[in-house]
Length: 501
Image 1 (tube, rainbow, N blue to C red):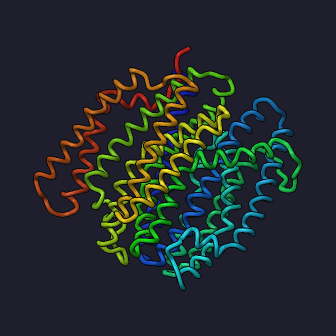
Image 2: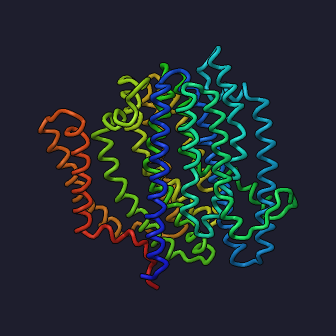
Image 3: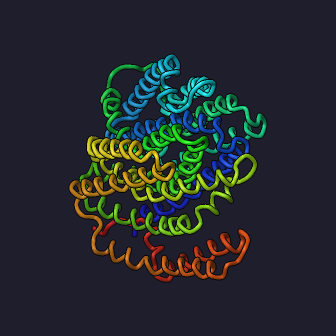
């Protein structure tokens, strides 16, 4: 095992810790927001409108970053510093130009956009939705600039700074909630400013790396080609995010609070699982890009196998806890103030079914990075269009079954997406889920069974109180899982070692 491999494993752990801390602060933000607004019509509006910058715009930003990282890797490896700076300058200029045009256009047509996002909201609530849409539309520009800069930081190995960008955002929103309380307009302004802070937070690294950037360099080069690739990458890399937006839009046709419950549950799901999935995809993408440039499919296959070993090792106990304790988790995190026991029941149901989308979410983040590194942009786009169409049809057909149907349909289409893209990745790079991988999965049943055994034991004791009915069995079962996994040497996979030559 070489030092680079060890360093990558340590970087993954370090990035996971930073993302965990940032997500933890995001939890605090969600808890404060839920306690003030609960699952009211105002929360329905905010969650629906906020889904645009928080999910779709983030998907656009991630798409830009996914194209930029391989391009910048090429410029750093094969071109001069001046050519690198020209490429980045023209990229920033084009993003700024088009981001500003789209933002202004969106503000003009905000009433129509608000109706599309929240078709079930009418009257005075619809006017509030239009106002919030106008306030938060500038985040499109800020998100795009943020993720371009994040990609630059990741190429240069500054993963911790890139992972910490949500810290100033979450701090700002928490302070705004504590200072102004139930002023949704003020919170919306702070949300937009928070995205600007995420961009500014990264600029010192660009200065240290001596990038000479002009935001007025609009001459054509690789950026024009990159922007043409943006739509297929966006569609391919945003399936989960778009499905969540569709769910919230359909939720506006159901009982008050449904969209809010969908928002709280999906945010919790993405927050918890994203700690590891996003950390992994961020750390390995520059290496995948390099191996793709070298056409080194042996290393790509080996990396993919180890990546999924690590993710499955982490996500199996997550799913076990969610299956047994989804209501307890939601009550512990959210149930206070305006967030009632009724809110808990709605949110827990959606959270349970969203959690089964976790494998598809991991495949979206990991497999798509492989396709983008190989410049195969249309494969994930086609798979996403198929699955998104299926999601809309399922939501429409099953709407009468309520919040469970909406969340379950998203989980189902993400599983379909995992199967489609897994097959296509195998066609591109060869079989990576070999006999060793499946042996690993079978052995993983041992610590998983130990975890379930502890949970069932506590359940049969019928002890009262959150400590003995939820917290203690969760902690002890998790410890049993880790101890058994350690003795079975599952943790060796966290080295992310390279295949022997």
